[in-house]
Length: 220
Image (cartoon, rainbow, N blue to C red; front, side):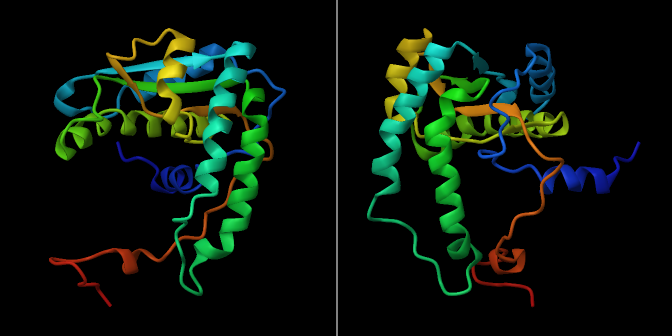
């Protein structure tokens, strides 16, 4: 049976990183999160390894501690000297102030999100060669994206963040994660979103980013 391409395209093009529009006051039923996990488990995984684990954090003290780790890493990150420079007319330049404002909001309110979602993958990869790292992350990222899409379809917003990872070991100790066995991949605040929907984001045109047969060959 053919999938409704219009509905699928709407879901794929309007699943945004949600920060300011997270409903921080409305609880999220655990059953709804588990429903999204069951969908996520249908994602591809390298060699059918299924080495993924998923941790939801609802405890207020633990969320506050995770948010403190996130905040500790945020200021050095946002003030780094190697900020990307964009050419005139690049939509990313115009969007930067809004993105920064949204990120600052999340820093101050991350602990208020009803749920923190931490996806994990079995193994440690920091000392592995690039192909091995790509294989490991490629076995968890599709599942997390599927979770985000499933959540979006159910009125839940989320935002992929990684800034607690400089303090991954501290987070592991806080949450009882076996650090030597499992790598944390991200931390996503999850909540119902406010408003009714989301619009498409401004992006660089695909033709400028797509190459054919060799680097630099673009279709006119």
